[in-house]
Structures are given as structure tokens and as C-alpha cells.
Image 1 (cartoon, helix red, strand yellow):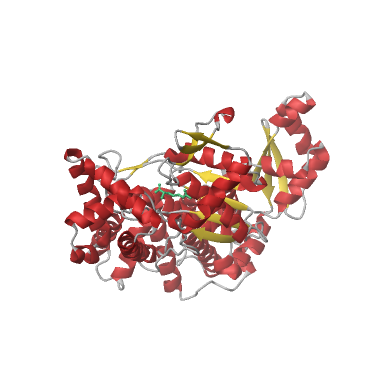
Image 2 (cartoon, protein in one colour):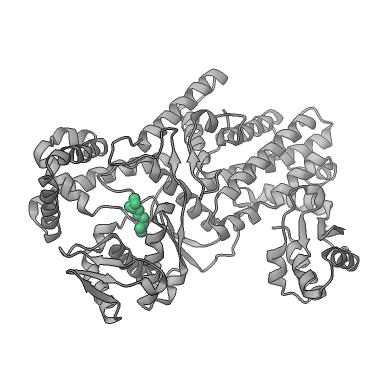
Length: 567
Ligand code: ARG
């Protein structure tokens, strides 16, 4: 955030009678730097003052004198545009970025507050498909963004490790299972058994009843059922953890659905005491109709608890344990109704913190051939997607830069970066169409484009043999080309983008921002020579690109993407 934002807010507040915080939220970042660093739309005031917004803008502009950071204010139609002092940008901010390095952009607005992020949460014995990729990638970025804002973050993987599918798997494994194949490749093999179960059950419907019985035995703690379940769970978890490690992701807790088994009864009891429970054909339900929501089933007539019962127990446990200020559930939009019911139930149970629970939904991911489904067997495994990404990246690198050192490392950073960014660049609520060529295009709206810009700067700095161009402020005074200004202004807004991304739980803001910054750099580099510029100017430009490198690197890290030095 630019230092004069608060100042503008305070001054406008005293001129208009609005609250300073309100002014601050109204301040926009104009799309074009020629319109200043901030713009204030006068429409809301027009209603209050019964004057045209244009007239208000003109009047206010005349009453805002320049100050240490504020160079000038102009009215443009219904807007007031604020311009920061150029000397501030180049002489103060630029050295500040270089000095702060990896911590540039971080904020403390979340200090003292705790956020829980429930994300990834694959289902054991159903595959970790690319559908879970979105939750993993978005959730990881949100964890990093919240941390950058000063929050204490707890990342939780609410493993889907309980449910009737285990009954099916046990039946399938007892009939057709081979221990060696299970140990060799558990995720694929369990999935294979899962699909086979459904195929066979079409001709042999009794299998379904058998599976229900096995699940009941599991619930009762039957030894054989329990042992198989544990084996399925442990083997799958190991495999997931390898993937997380590969992606550079770690969780603070792996407490899954099964870990709440001993708290379900108490949860149902609480609902009963609150008068929320009705019996319906042997099942226990809560009537949410008065709130415009469907009936909430908490326990089936065979005694089995449901997904939502576990979510209720987990939320209560988490509040007891972490006393969170906010809890995010990064889960697909197809579960919107579930979260509406779940949060409503929490409120009815009397938890005033129910309002701090937020569903962060996202759309589906398609690979040209339609929605992926676990049952039909046309699912695409995450592991395969990641491998393919890295292979393709490696081919591109081999072609573009055959003499590159550490090709494996770079291919991994680029391949994974492409997949992660290919997701995060989209508004999360929209469906994503995944296209290999698009996400790996070095000139497109991609991670490789940003990574390549970063590597290019690294190479400029290596050639200049001057890491940061530390000679300071005199060189910086020579920077005033429009491309240079655009770059420094963009960098000034970095932390604000982070803060906005956290406010709306939308990492796409930061993704988009980085893309623009990389474009700005390439435009600058095309028009303004660096290494061949005259001595002082060269020094100033080296400082500028060194700062861009820092922001690109920090920004990619916030999205969970590495920035190699060479590509
Ligand atoms: N395992 C679930 C699924 O794949 C997602 C769980 C999300 N987290 C939660 N607390 N409900 O659909």
C-alpha cells in the first residue's frame, strides 16, 4: 500500500464527512497509471449531497493541496485521481524493496488472528484426481497469502477416510484383491477395485448389501475390517504425502473424517438438547425448512453418521482447539448446499462463531472430454497430470536451452508452476478448461512467462555483476521513463493486491498482478536498455530490475510456485 492512501482517506473524510475507513475501501487502483495511483469515485457522495459527481469531483480537487507524498490531485469526470510524488517512488520505495527483499509485500493486518484453512481433503481409496487439484492449489495459495498478511494459519487436510466406500473396497479386496499389487501402487489399485466393484454390482446387486454390512462391521471395530481399512488408509496417505512434498505443500493437521468418530454422539446429543432433532423412519434429521434449506440428515436408520455430522463435530473440535477467528473451507461449488446446511446447523447449535466459517467454492476442471467422475473410471489422476507437466516442460527446456544446468530442477519448477498458475489465474468460481499448450506457453498468460521474465532479470544482474546496484538514490533520480514509472508504481501496489486477495479469498488477483508486472518488465526491457545505458542510468535501471525480480519471486512464492534463476 502506498503511504499516502491513509492520508488521502483521512483528508477526504474530513472534507466530506465520510468515515476514513469508508473512504479507504472506496479508493480504487485505476487501470491506467496515467490516471494516478488511486482514484476516488464520487457517485456515493452525489446521492448524499444531491449534486452531480462531476461537480463534487471538481470541488474536492480544488481543496486537496499537495503534501509530502501527494504530488497532485486531478478531477476526471466523476473521479478524483491522486498522484504520488515520483521522488518518493524512486528514492524511498525502490531502496526499500531492495532492502526488504524476501519480506517485501508482507503486512501485519492479520496479526494476533488465527485462520484455519480446510483444503485438499482427498478421499482415500477414491483417487486424488485433478478435481482435488483445485482445492490443493487454491488452499495452499490462500494459506501463504494469509500468512503474508500476518495471520497465524493452520492448514488442515480433512481426509475423506471414512464412509460406505470402505465397505465396498473391503468386499472388492476380499474377493479379487492381491496384496502385492496393493503395496506396489495403492492409489491406482484401490481405484481399480473401486471401479470393479461398481461394474460387478450391476450384475450382482447383493454386493451392495454385503458392502453395507462390511462398513457396519468397520464401524463396530471388527478386527479384519479395521486392519484392511488401516492398510488402505496408510498406503494412500503415504502416496498423497509424496505428491504434496513434490508440490512443496505441507499441512499442520491431517485429522480426517474418521478422527471424529468418538465425537459424533455428543454432537447429535447437543442437537437433541437444542430441540433440533426429529426422528423420521428411524433416521435422525434436523428440519431446516424454516430457513429455506432441505432437511439435514444426521444419522441414517442403520446408525451410520453422515458427512455433515462429521463436519459439525470437526468444526466444534477445531474451535475448541484453535479458537479461530476465521475458518475457510476450500471445496468445490457443487457442495454449496452442504455448506449452507452445515453453517446453519452450527448457528442453530448456538455457536456465535458460525458466522466466521466461510465456504470458498470453485468451479470444475475439464480436460476437453467432459467432467471427470470417479465412478465411471474416466478419471485423470493428479500424479499423471503433474508428471506430464514436468515432462513437457523438460522437452521445451531441452529445445530452448540445451546447455542449461539443473534441468531436472527447472523442469519441475516450470511444469508444476504451469499447472498451478493455469488454475490460479482463473476466477476460482469459473470452470477451468485445461489445455497443455496454453498453460506451458512461454509467451502466454502463464507461470513460465513470469518465471522466464524472472530468469531474464537474474541473467541481466549476473552480467552486470552487480547484485542490487546498491549505489543508491542518485542513480534512481534518473528514472523517469513511462515504462520505469509504470513498473515502480505497480510494485508499490504489491501488498495491496495481497490484502485484496485475502479479503476476497481470491489468489487470482495476485496471479493477474504478477502477469501484469512481468509484462511491464518486458515492455520496459524492450524500450529501455539496461546494460548498455550510460553509467548512472544503468545503475538506476539495475536497481529497478533487481526490485522487479524480488516482487516476481515473492509473488510466485505466495502462489506456491518456484522462480528458478535460469531457464
Ligand atoms: N473429501 C471431500 C470431497 O472430496 C472434501 C472435504 C472438504 N472438507 C470438509 N470439511 N468438508 O468431496
